[in-house]
Amino acid sequence: MGQHSTKFSVHLLEKNQHTLLNKLYRNHNSPMRITQQAEVWVVRNPAVIAGVCLSPVADGFWLTSLFTAPEKRQQGVARCLIQQLQSFYLDQPIWLFCHPQLESFYRKLGFKQTQQLPESLRSRLTRYQQHKTLIAMCHRKVSQPIE
Picture 1: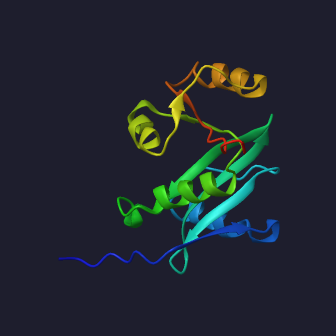
Picture 2: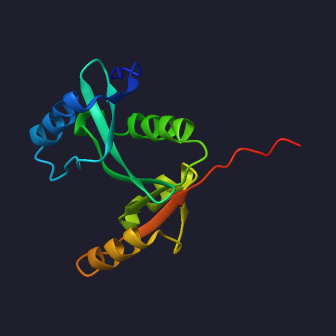
Picture 3: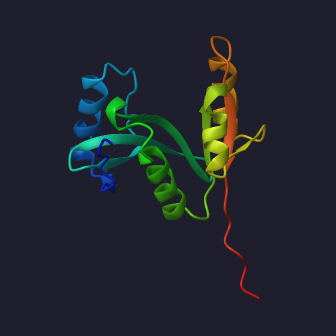
């Protein structure tokens, strides 16, 4: 039986450390990029093994560039990262576009398919869908009002 380390930690990177995620992308020939305005979150074990970008949009965030090192996949790394984001951005919606084969992964994390997008994302999705099939999804967990 192989050993899988489950000791990893999630961190928000300072702008001057964004090169750490760019290096992960580059080392695995990923086309993903960090946008200028994005908040960058990574998972370390102890090196960076996964990352994601969250760009501010409307009253929430747009999740892009989720990537896990191939040798660390199927170990709960991306799930842990997204759950940490959902806790940190508790009252703000998080939108994403995904390929149909990833829809069930995101559904298990509480995302729901949506047609209600901020205009900037709606126009972007329309452009992207000219070349590939994507599904728009949103996670919104609003805290209960105090009575």
